Amino acid sequence: TRTSRPQRILKAVQKNATKGDPESVISAIDHYCRHKEWAMNVGDDKGLILDSVLTEVNPSTALELGTYCGYSTVRIARLLSPGSKLITVEFNPAFAAVARQIIAYAGLQDKITLVEGPSGDLIPKMKERFGIKSFDFVFLDHWKDRYEPDTKLLEDCGLLKKGTVLLADNVICPGTPEYLKYVRNSPRYESRYYKSNLEYSKVEDGLEKSVFLG
Ligand SMILES: Cn1ncc2cc([C@H](O)c3cccc(CNC(=O)c4cc(-c5ccc(F)cc5)cc(O)c4O)c3)ccc21
Ligand SMILES: [Mg+2]
Image (cartoon, rainbow, N blue to C red; front, side, top):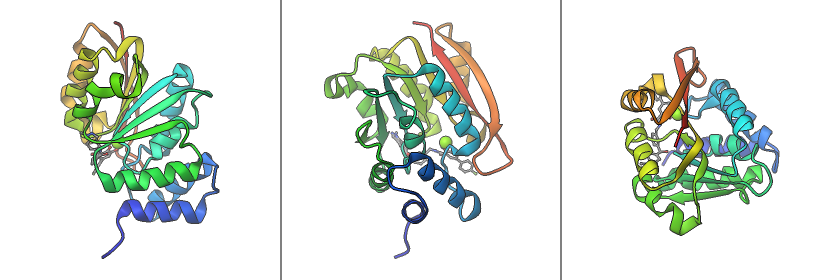
């Protein structure tokens, strides 16, 4: 049967990027998805905002919900300080298989733990399985109706601390209305919207940055 879109993205990385060079992996994916076929990576426009928030936070432990092909995983891990860790959660085995290869191609496998399974099951196991006390940074990019329940789950599991930064993709397109209502109305968060555009497109989209106040 035909290859999948993630497999074609992996092929584009293997063809056009340099092994061990995360910047070239990011560029190869962006070029492929802009000129050949669209894919739901955070992309280069919103990616610059992700980079700037990450540089500001400089997290020791980061969590990503929704790995897909590993584009934002590589984007995040390449900016982590030595000894810092990123845990990324993916429930779709085919996506996880491609992401592992793209992460390895970028040479970032030592900074990243990819865990397969649904976020709702894995979040309560973070402390016992990975010895996580709390996360400094969380990137939300999985099913849009899971952002709000998973944020509440992170709170209830004691995985957020005063100053933890949540950064949510797609708050306009496809949209995450319940999540936005929650973080913007809760006294426990200080939220700000970063206007941008949907990956590889002119449609408006943006990221919501929410600081947990404890
Ligand atoms: C529970 N759990 N735990 C882990 C976990 C992991 C996953 C998968 O990684 C996965 C699979 C399918 C869809 C998503 C969400 N992403 C999107 O739906 C999206 C859409 C668009 C867009 C925009 C405009 C369009 F016209 C079409 C699609 C642009 C974007 O940037 C997106 O992130 C995530 C799913 C549930 C999971
Ligand atoms: Mg997204």
